[in-house]
Length: 263
Ligand code: GCO
Image (cartoon, rainbow, N blue to C red):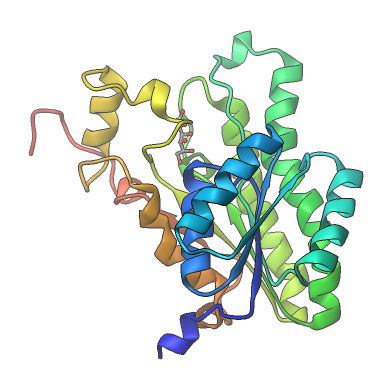
């Protein structure tokens, strides 16, 4: 039974994996036996530092710097990875940004940038990787969605539009590519303790109290909580699962919440 979750011999590309949720998911794939390829676009130094951290964790890893929104750079990077590391069996489209601004104040260019990174880049990277998967009649694509794939929240309208679109893009990728034995699914993280949420996760800050109260588990998620769902969707165990989003959210989407004075 455990062989179903064994990723030995597989190559997994995880975008935006120099820190945070991407690093946690990539680490899970590595611990399940995959050879991990991480992407970043901030600095080579940051990528090199992350590679060292993976290696200290016993993970076989390679790091590549490229801009996931630039189709030419992505195509060149995928060709380089497939030449230097191996054909990509598993793709996690995790790279993403958020800009928190009331919609009425948001600049169009900022809205477009969020959509470009969070929605268009999963299309760009998947398009570059899926050609090999189609040829090999095998592949796993996992798009990292969000609570905002299902719910709105003040000031994150562009992000919600992108993540809502990413849920539907996941369903369409599943529709078009399942016939090639490619399974495309999503993971929707709830509220996790990362650098992205650091500004809204301050002890005593109203939003921090709100999230803890709004989450039945009564806490922020730990990035490692995502590893089980990641390995499941990357492995043979999910070969007949397609177009689904697994929400790892402590129960947030299951409830309308409760009054703050209620246990
Ligand atoms: C926010 C948070 C969320 C989380 C996550 C929830 O500002 O509401 O950053 O967007 O990061 O996406 O699923």
